[in-house]
Image (cartoon, rainbow over all chains, first blue to last red; front, side, top):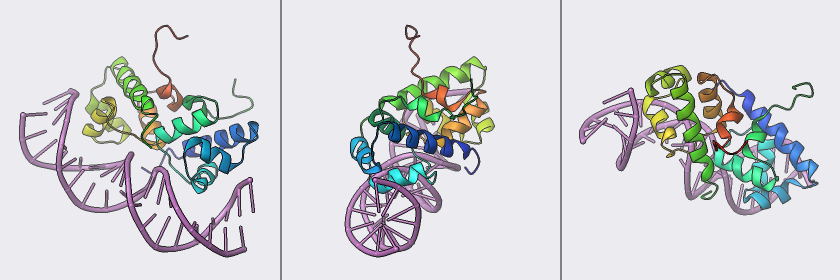
Amino acid sequence: MEDETGIIDVVAVAVRRARKGLGLSQEDLALEAGLDRTYVSQVERGTRNCTIIVLARLARALKTTPDRLLVPHKRSRG
Amino acid sequence: MEDETGIIDVVAVAVRRARKGLGLSQEDLALEAGLDRTYVSQVERGTRNCTIIVLARLARALKTTPDRLLVPHKRSRG
DNA sequence: ATGTGACTTAAAGTCCGTT
DNA sequence: GAACGGACTTTAAGTCACA
């Protein structure tokens, strides 16, 4: 259960981007998603392997869909 | 952490569909993904709230991407 | 070849505080 | 506002016996 860790960073970046795009603080997002503020911080820093339910909650709070939070954000991804 | 459970079923359906599409047994998939056979069974039955790392491992074994396993499979959806 | 509940042990997720 | 530490509770990971 140690590999495939790239996905963690994908989510981290996606969440942070989406949150900032909405002009929310981590605390705002945590409140919206029903999560702890420190947990959101950890997700954005790529130190948490969150579950799909948490992903769905974050997605909802961020006005997006769960699958979008798993798409690597590469500028030239096409 | 109780709501948003819909995502669980989305993954369940997506995994089972992808697996059958490849003509694999649950045991085959489990082996490929480095998971237990019964664990795969539980994911497909929607009784597990798996983490994104597990999702990534399943995705790789299923020759797909993690985000695709989170897309609801509605035939009249897109 | 799959479903299922029970189980142990890691880790998810919370709460409080400090920098 | 956010990174970080640590102690804490709950749940996922991983596996088994049996159907």
